[in-house]
Image (cartoon, rainbow, N blue to C red; front, side):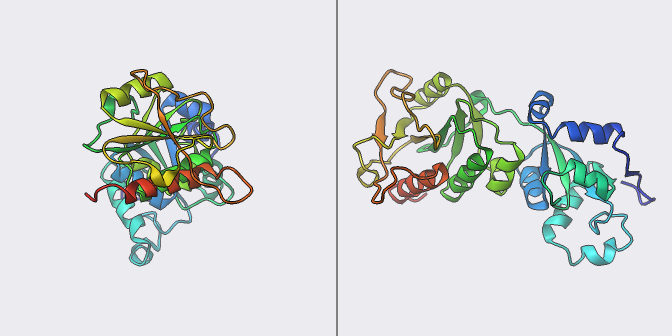
Length: 288
């Protein structure tokens, strides 16, 4: 971006603006293999994870705009994440300024968060997933609510999970609600997406033991062996795992695990369940 007065995108008819608005449609985003990220923290997370930055869009009123009249004075006292993102974006000349009205059109939700960034969607094929020895893996089966997916990623990050694998109907980790509820951790954890059979085969080939979280299991969490390479499978809050994940890729029965419940309900929110199981697994595993 030059030191001259920047071109400010003001018209909804501008081709760039129209494209960004279309990318707010989930189907269009997936088809175009692009994703939009709202907020400085989440944008920095995506940049640090190595995602390919296509554009950084700042509102006209933002002091973070390098050509804003008060930029030099105000940026010095700004959130350091803003300065870091601006410096990284300037190297690839991807910064654009939009009117506040346009920002409200391209941002997600009723309260724009200071920046919208556009990235190329990374490849999440199983072939690209590399796991360390004694890996702790979380498998999400058919989680459809983006907020739940994001919350589970936040728990997985806190528990130090080595990878998250998604299968079934829930694989949209770049839905704005998923990104927001994850606090950007969807960009930080190695992730893959595949069918149940492909994931089961992949995990067996990697010599990773499978453990399914089931409310009907007779094996309580506290008595479970979490040693070695292990993949913990959790299902949707509404349906659990049901008949899915009964056997692994070699046809062996998958052991179940149950969180003991002492009240009147028989299950927890999926992100809470994942957190309980993951931290118990972490407690029982050797510290690296």
